[in-house]
View 1 (cartoon, helix red, strand yellow):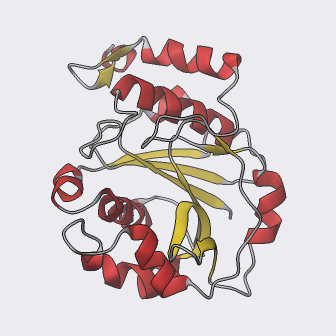
View 2 (tube, helix red, strand yellow):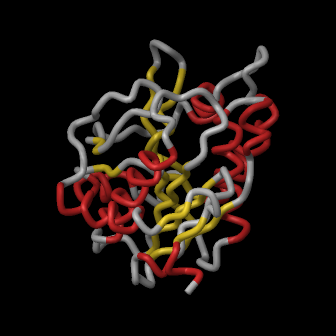
Length: 231
């Protein structure tokens, strides 16, 4: 079974330029629609680390699972990367799917060339496939593939090292522990970069944005829920 875990935080607790919750929710809803359309994926799990819950009924797909927990304090006190690591752990511990290995992508993004990368990355001979920047000594954690036991054995034990107070970023931890992992070709991201609010290759189609906009119009931000869910 091929699973992708999407991690995000609709209500960011760390400084990011793309910080409007409605914009961030629009990004996630658009991305999930695209991932659901990937026929080669069996399961899409979105986990929100700010406590926001997206109703699974929105997408009407048995491939989609929505999880949430609140790691806002962790992100504020340490580094958003630690909250991201916690989100992966939360999914692997709480998903109703059995996840032996997983693709991971930032929840607001879609990888346009996923179908080409999938076969290259999904390789049982290895524990993970990541992209490293050896000049900066860090790993791109926006998108990768990893076996679950590799996550528990080689990444999670170093959670406490991820901190903004004289510690490491999640990208640096991944590089130090997984730098010998085989790489794969460049992903083509669709969406906006949260730290710079700049466009990647392209944004989502008008049709996808329109559908996501219809869902957002039913969102009551003060109650943190969707109107029709209360009816």
